[in-house]
Image (cartoon, rainbow, N blue to C red; front, side, top):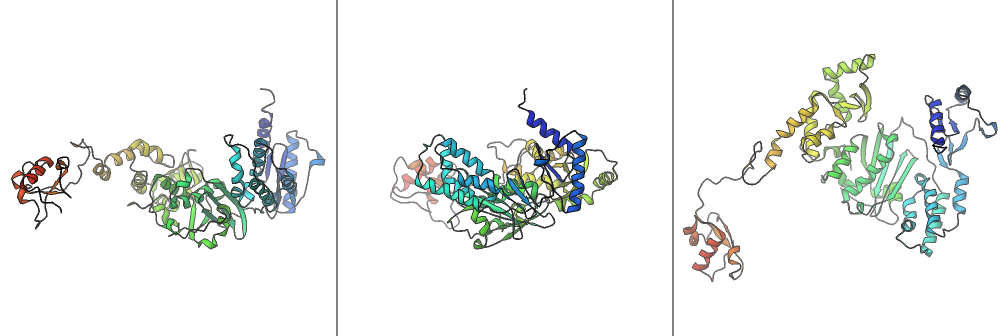
Length: 497
């Protein structure tokens, strides 16, 4: 194997040494120890030094920076106020000369991408240069490319300071999308915690307005899931139409299921006040004024009430005798290790193998809700989808019974000709009396080619059309029969409804 795996082995060894210390971050031989105050920091240092001595790890005193209020670590400068790019790294970026070939440009874009969370409009600024990353595009450098390159360098000189999150306060998420880009920021008060932006793919630019406005919210929550999941999040959007779930495509439904995992509160703000998100998603594009994505976004415009909310499930779990027995055993430490109390769907729930145990009172509603919003899937597909999140005894048989006995599905499935066993016939209007007359409709003079295309229909009460002329043929109500009858009686008359 040689020494190619040495860094991985060394990192694994260092993580094993400090695995139980939550005030230590280690990357190879760079060990970061952080504390709230001076006294606590001295105690933390004592523990770290003893741990290093126990495992025979030596320290280089010249490279140790102890009791600092600000420290450089992995290209960033960390302080009590927050995190920002390291000053000398920014200076290096500003001194880089114009790229002479595709390889140098790729190296530059890769370097600045490391600080993508801290530079406003990073996607917008870099987009003119991204075309050269493809080998199919000739590397022909233009004056406009020079301007874009220099604008990127200036933007890094103004990189924002990202603050550390306070998990006792709610997070504010601002997201927006333009015709070609999307972006958003995460804030607490006036402090910026994270920035996000990227260009839309060639397929995403064709999304509907609703999907396009929902996309940046989903992207931001996915990107910073470890920060936001389980904590209050206020999403600010300038697109009012999101409050009305008029679009029920599978893509939007999947996104709404993802949003249901978070403790979201949605608020509408006017476009001109959504400055933060606009700064990352557009340059000179006007903001949208649409009809707020609030908690009703989970309802998905179906006949079944959404029961995916964590608090709703927790309330029903507290009323379920079996689940309460499991919870009591978990709290007492006498439980099967497969059963646990875990933070799922935004609150603490009783789980089996990291899946929520569905209370008996909610099982039918859960099956119906999934079945409606997955587009009436087959038994196996619905079971595989639901078991990723939920569990209960004989779960597969419950789902199979519901799907096979569903009235809505049986009525909707037409097989043509005779009905197959187990499926309900469609609700067709039944004729109580024999059709005694019909009407043929046509526009303009007739020809031999158009004679057979006439449509025979039963006339309404009081209709004075060709009904009297076709009574004798009511037993043979076919297009050719009716058209021939009408043509022989009167070829000069036009018949219309």
